[in-house]
Amino acid sequence: MDFVESTVEADGERLACTVIEPEPLAGPVTALLMHGAGSGDRHRCLPLARELAAAGCRAVVFDFAGHGASTGVLGELSLARRARQARAVLDRHAPTGPLLLVGFSMSGQTVADLLRMPELAVRTTAIALGAPAAYAREIHELPFAAPEFTNTLRTEGSWRSSRAFDTLTAFGGRAVLVLPETDGVIPAEVTEALDAALRARPASTAPYARLTLPGADHLLGRWLGEHPQECARVAAALLDRTG
Image 1 (cartoon, rainbow, N blue to C red):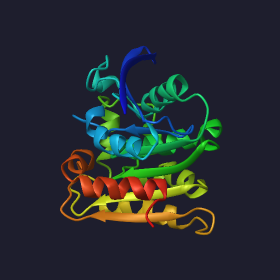
Image 2 (tube, rainbow, N blue to C red):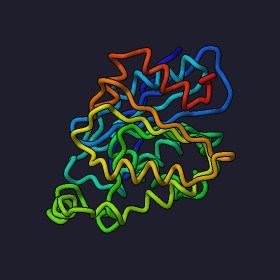
Image 3 (tube, rainbow, N blue to C red):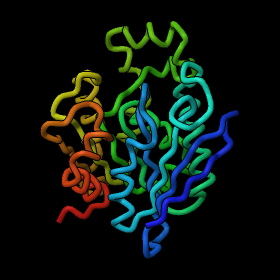
Image 4 (cartoon, one colour):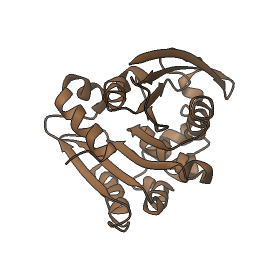
């Protein structure tokens, strides 16, 4: 497989990207894998991206602004900007064709935000959410450094107003919820609410799998890199090759 490094100019920033082209070149399916917040960057997504590419899927990973090799200040990033940046990467590297969307932690919300864009929703055939988060709709546009953003996060149950739940229930493709055995970051209530949203879809037309990875913690991307068999298991579930 070939690794192609590039940058995407978007949202006033320069975003560092890695595209993994499978050999031989397969069909038009592209997977976009998105890292979480904090110290996350695209390299944490590379193990799963490589696994998907080995299975014949084109894979794209990138650093959100303020992360990794991208420009920007982390505190100036917002959920809305994350969605715009992910959309710009797709416009550059996968403007057409079917999509697989993968989001770890905060990017679970970003997957849902992308699915709220009708032109992307109709192209998305499957999603994978790794230890996903959900955030109150009221803070969608707020910079992460804004006191109101932090105060809302600390308000019990604020996540219940997230648009992610209705969006995921409306998604008609394959969905995989990937969970660590122990998650010290995401409240169990959030996880179960996301699980319920995905289970509310008709199983006959919208298949769903919930995978719990024994011994894993919240940093699933890194953990998958250390456990190749489990990484292959997640890729197979996303690609519906579990038989």
